[in-house]
Amino acid sequence: MKQMQDGDGGIRSATWVAGVLLGFLGAFVDFYSGYLVLSRSQMVNEMGMMEGYTSTGLAWGVGVIILGLLLAITSIALLLHFGMNRMGGFGVLMIAYGFAMLFIGVSMYIGLVSMMTGVFSPGLAMLAVGILMIVNGALMRL
Image (cartoon, rainbow, N blue to C red; front, side, top):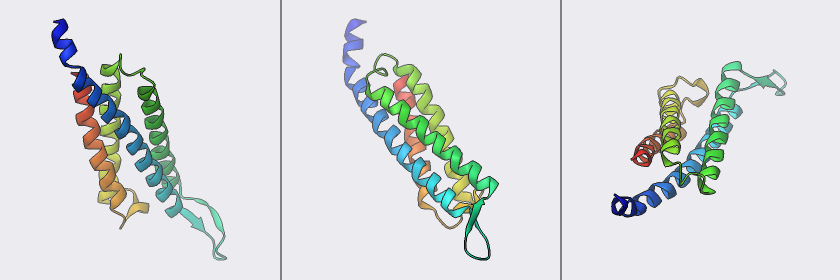
């Protein structure tokens, strides 16, 4: 049994590195998407002055940015080797974050997030990173 665990070291290291990279990439995509949503949901009066944000735009933007913060914190924890001994727990988190990114990406792509209509790259990036997170999280659970 000990030999099998030693042989898994390469796979564990690869999934650890991939998890850190996907976490930071996902956080970047979330921050960028949150910025786009917030910048497109500004309300402007007839004089061209910003008066605030639409409520749905504010909710989507802040929610996506919070997801980005959670991803960044999780990636830092994984990077600091807290995750090497708790790969199963971090795998569950990666799967959950992946499904959240899939939901947000599909919502952006199909136009549910009205502020993102006509901008497909952030939604597609979220879909791609979400799928990779789910796969990587499943491999972490092994």
